[in-house]
Image (cartoon, rainbow, N blue to C red):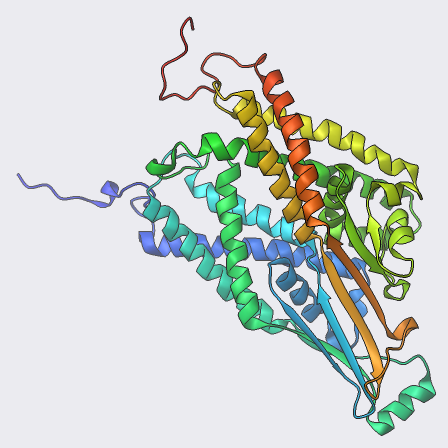
Amino acid sequence: MSQTRGPAAAGPGNPAPHGAPPALRGWAEALGTALAGLAAMAVTAALGLWAAGAAGLPGGGFPAVVAAAVVAAAGGSLTATGDAGFLARAGAAVDAVPLSVTLAGALVLAALFRRPLRHRAVAPPGELLGRMARTAVCWLVLLLLVALAARHRFTLSVGSGLADRIGAALGTTPTVGFRADLPATLGYGLLWVLAVLVLSFAVSRKAPLPPGLLRLPYAVRPPASAMLLVLLVYTALGLLAGLAELATGDHPARTLAVLLLGLPNLAWLALGIGTGGGWTGHVDRALGLPLPHPLEQVLGRAGQHTLDLGSLGAYDGRVWWLVAVAAVVLPAAAFAAAVRAPARTPAWRHALEMAVALALTLLVVGLATRIDAHYGLSLIGVGDLGGDLGGAVTLEPQSARLLGVGAGWGLVTGFAGALAARRVRHPGEVRDARRPPPAGR
């Protein structure tokens, strides 16, 4: 008797018997994941910019500014241009990442991408690559639409009604605009989404892997998940501090804008500074950035200055508490990583893995928090008008210093965490199931 295979014979990952075709369902899941991630970023950016007062921008510029914030958060590139006729020229450049928007999109994107695979231990490499490819394609199409909307032009006032009228008559009214650089945005946007998807597998203990990579989690996942834990804990602590400031401070709208746009920028900066790292920068008061008072005191002076424990501590001794926070959070994360590692992992190896992981994390934090922004108006190509017509903010990480302090803290806390974890392990809890148990157990 011949037998036929019905829909119930679908393989792993295929839809239910009466569901949509596998290919169609795969694209629908990819589109839903990309849409949800982008929506989380757009909502976060819109609320933050609204709190910052951007809803009242002239010429209906609010949607374009929201789109620009999403583009910047997704790794895209923005080009700022200006013009003031034949007598003057306005110019601007912005290179900064609103990490609150980035984090919101990354967490939603990663969670939804892993969700269909949550009940599986192993997944064929072709299936995983196919899911990543479909999600990346959908993400790029949506990012392209957002990038096309990230375009606007503003007219700058020179501070006097008569001067504005004369400038308009002479064709020298300064204007500043921005637009997304489409090739760079799509290129960096592709790298961003692929990095988020790959890292989501690196930090998750339950995400399935291809059979050939089953040993990878024992070397990568414990320290990687520990670093994610550190970043999220610092973000949560920053949120608590921000909510306290929101309830008691004099500028709740500005505080809310910082929380919704740049909370990780400040929280992860605190991580780097608390471990002994440093940044170099300068902030013009003309930009009116809502910065914590110690940062404003250090960076608001003329010239470039180093932002670290020493310079901040000279204005506010409470900054030294950042060392105490690091001394609690980092050993706790190292202990959590050691508990998840195989029982036979030697302490020196765990310390080395944590050193590499923390050094790379601080390097990424430094690169993600860098800022280079300026705007100004020059007359006949000479000079730059200060005050309300010009300003700049720069913040550059001291990368070698961040790598050094990260490696040092990682070695110490990793070794201590490995020693402490030996006392709490139980038979079979973290042991490699493919190896026989140690003698006597």
